[in-house]
Image 1 (tube, rainbow, N blue to C red):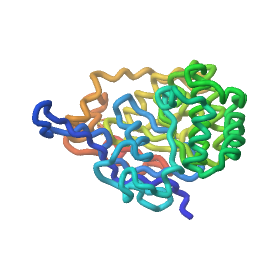
Image 2: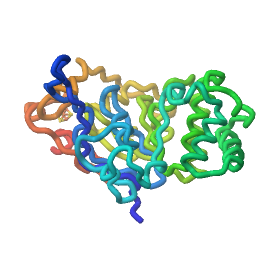
Image 3: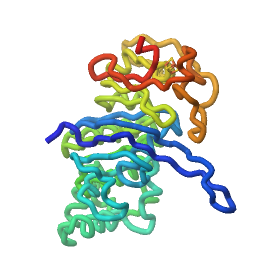
Length: 323
Ligand code: SF4
């Protein structure tokens, strides 16, 4: 069996821009624009970048909440996009997602126990008795008293609701979990509880995570490797320590310069990027970061740099690292 549980190949997810009246397509928002990315079995891959860079769209494409325009997503070597959307396929329950706001994904009219039992009976084929016992166990696994199963989603705090969302994802015994800004809306003390819970569950269930976040300190803590996205492309990818110690891409350097250093590492000089992120409907030619890059040269606005290995396992797409 390959080390890779997920292989994303040249993925494009474009959203058409249509006129109000005749619904004619006049352009495309290129949310993901040619991404290739492997995720190894048992690792946590952090995916970072400013909002709108396409990181959430990749996570949603893996669980088929966004339909790709082209490309492949292999799960255990099988292209999951070969199955038409909505059609049953073996990977459906193996690939799960938890969101920033679990409230919107929990049915407000069902108690937590009913919600879990429905998943267990309908999707896992359990009897009612087995589902009742399993739902209590799942609540215990995420640190909630099973008696809380009698409550409705609105009766929980934000952190407790995220635990419920994790329990619901675990009910399907997933092998791969997309955590989409899963702790971003929580207080810092609750964030660390949920992160520790995710790390414990990963160990216990042998799962693989795609951890999407703009909170770089959290990503550094939880991830084995990190990929950095800018305007629909991966611009840098490396083991976590390498990327945080020696960021090679000017965009990564700017992102990391903004985080306060708590450990013994030296605080970097703050790099303030000028200008706004260009629109994904009107991507600049050449390097798409050239309109904001402090080191841009003539070639940068003409030739798009390719992601190249600059050190073992460390990839960067920048003309400076090609010299
Ligand atoms: Fe900056 Fe040029 Fe590198 Fe792009 S290719 S990040 S514009 S130096």
